[in-house]
Amino acid sequence: MKKKKIIQASIIQENINDENKITKFTDRQDLLKKNQETTINPDIFFLDTKFAIQEKTKEENKEIFVLKPEFQVIENPIEIKEVKKENIFDIKSKKNQSLQIKKISKSLGGRPILKNISLTLEPGKIVGLLGPNGSGKTTLFNLIIGKIFPDQGEIIFNDEVIHDLQIHTRSLKGLSLLEQHKGLFGNMTAEENLYAILELHIKDKEEINDRIDALLGYFELGYLKKSKANSLSGGEYKKVSILQRICNPTISTLLLDEPCAALDPLSISSLKKFIVELRNIGLSILITDHNYWAIENILDKAYLIKDGQILVEGTPEKISNDENAIKYYLGGNFRI
Image (cartoon, rainbow, N blue to C red):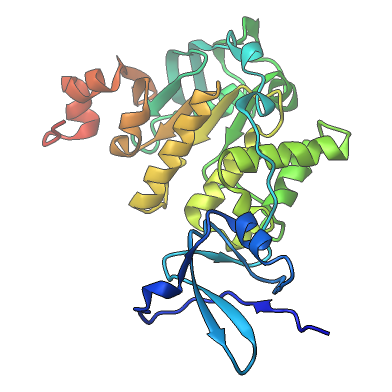
């Protein structure tokens, strides 16, 4: 009986100069078709394989396809279905879901925290809530989401007064918050973290799994599907945490409290692109940060809070050139 050939994939560091040994493959399927009678090591899968180096070992009668070092090798690949935007969010139903804060005031422990605050988050926009630590940003988020209630003023969402509603009711209407120090269940995978939220809203298991694949696939995070939350990098952890907050199909407006905190510059850049993509698919985003430079270039509008009051509002360009913003927040040496 003819012995089957065996294909093995591994990474080599040394240079191989024999150009005749290089074989091009457009994708993994082409490789499989060319070797229908071969046995492939089931634990090895290579991603984006365009070149493989073919070597023959006469003694063992093997063909070894060796990947060049710049290509990534992934064990036990995760199958993620190709999806369209419409499969993730019902964009049409969310076009009119604006958030309005009207003359909100709040005191805690007898100390005024917010004084007559008004702001608007229009559908499909990213609005920044800026200010130093202790200026009242987190308190305003807690008021919007329903953790605390205002002393006076109104919170209107989708033309409905909601400031007297409980947290879960506001969530069902489309509001979601990712707090700075809250996140995922560490011992659960990314998939399990999303499933834990979705099963509260969707009964059909196949529909839940399809939606998880849609979310991870669309945002190119499918490789994290089986990864434990406590093994993720800071940027990956933040992205999956955001997906957990918006995986419920009813969510249209996301509040992000200091999302860039404790992240390195490269992770911040990647996270900002991720947030912009959320806006592009129809979500409205209100984002706080004490570091203006971290989020300035993704904002459509910003509000700067000082001592519980709006100091200045407008486009990032206006904020950057405002004398009061420079004096009290950006610093006297600030330049665009």
